[in-house]
Length: 169
Image (cartoon, rainbow, N blue to C red; front, side):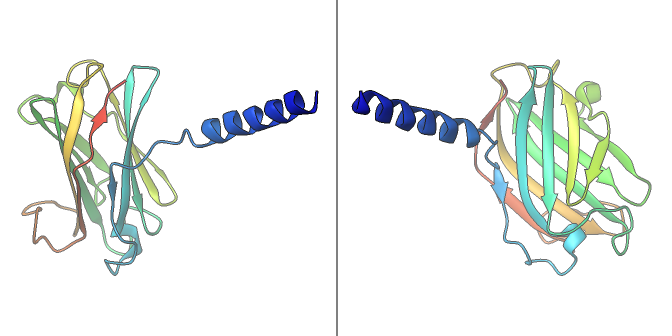
């Protein structure tokens, strides 16, 4: 009887531990503090799928994000979704979101939600993000001044890259 009770306790603990660790794993991580403006210092990027209908893209920063932190910043998230070169842009100066598959904005982000240190973008999976689509080759940029012209490696802002793969589910 004791062995059965101990086994039940161990199993329930294992189930709780596996359920508690179900949080999505970031596809990109970047050292906190490697850029002097916390609201533009990229910390991580995490993708998840909600109800097979929405791809959620969460960009975590070292400090609160705001259109004027302390000057307007712009953020760009690039990745490959299958054969599509995809981007998400957030222009803090005018609080504008754009993006999609380059040359086809049919699956553009529907907006941005700013919650403390996290910018969250929602994109319908219909179109470029069909179930099973592999997302790879992540590159993220922040740029002062609220515009992204000239963004990319060497831009005057924080950068982060990642080679993880996310599969839309």
